[in-house]
Length: 160
Image (cartoon, rainbow, N blue to C red; front, side, top):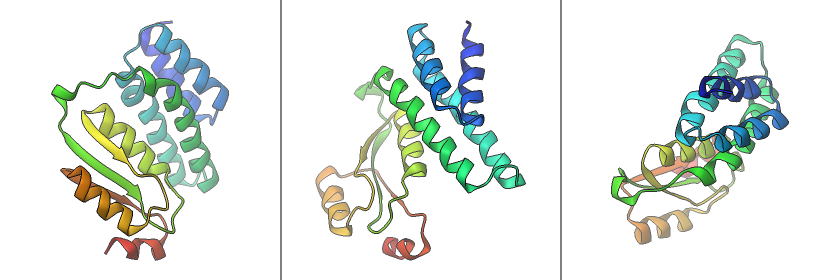
């Protein structure tokens, strides 16, 4: 299978909400030498874009959007170990977290992966992170960028 077919299959596995296919294709693509950055940015991300469009048009509902994100996470578990970090090319350091009281981290996880793929050193504090832990991490790590994630309106207030 050539690179374009792997990319199309990765995209399709996300659009079709197929956990097994995304894992299988991701493994095959990595074994075939497909650049992991390309697999993510030109295969998986376009799949999520299509899912987002289907959600906006009413063809997919929130449940499909969440499942697609989980499918992407499974594919990323396979691909991420193949991403080679080169600290000489780092664009900056990012500390990122989902704020306290919020357990929704799909968007944060996608952003974390994309930042890493594009040359940022990312310190992911996780989800449901207390404010004091975020402050401590900023003081200790001295990031160039702080990213905070919240899905729920009530937890967005913790970002103020």
